[in-house]
Image (cartoon, one colour):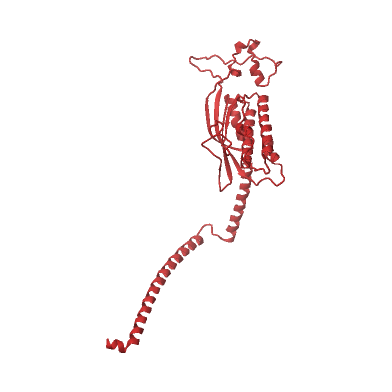
Length: 333
């Protein structure tokens, strides 16, 4: 102890030096660990560089130019591809009065076109818009989606009318807001409109049910294929149809009581007037072998589940008449 007292400064200096040595050792350990990490990262970067340098084709200026040209070709292809899909134009300036007027005008036109083409509709059919016709006030945020649905229903009906189906059974769509009753049979309660965040494509699910013969089913499918809008057919369910009392197919030829088996209901449906020439009906040939089947056309009930693909486009420019903008897609005939 006497020695420590006599050499107190020396002992304190020795202790401080020891602490510095410990700190230097700890710093050296940390620096060594960081150096190893940096070295490993350097090795990774070197390996990636070697991979790029040895790549075929090599990223030289000529190859980079070709890559840019290919990117330009891809952009042009995307523009052409987008033009083949229906545009989801969102009109501006819609209010309840303009929507009500558009709705009533459009539904009246659909009923009138059905009468002209001989397509039978359900009694007092509202084409899934019965709730909107009853209420006095519709939320503003629901007007644009309802217009888009109205355009889709109109296009689907015109395809069915062009195919001259026997009768329209129903059209189902997704609900919009709280005005659409969840208990109604006009809606697809388990589905909703979805949008792809990458491509901006919106999928509108629909279900169309109608009655007709096989030739009319083929005409409907051809109409969906050739339509300007993009229809993605998901399901096709075909079953035996039910002919109503007023159905032409339910009137026996022999019961009409006119010469040559002339059926006025059938003739009126397919455009023959009262003074059209009565032709002998085509009768299937008798089987030449036992148990040989004879094909007869049967009324079918067809249910088609489909999605309408639309790409989002900018809203209508300010000052554009909303009803006119909403009616624009119907010019695609």
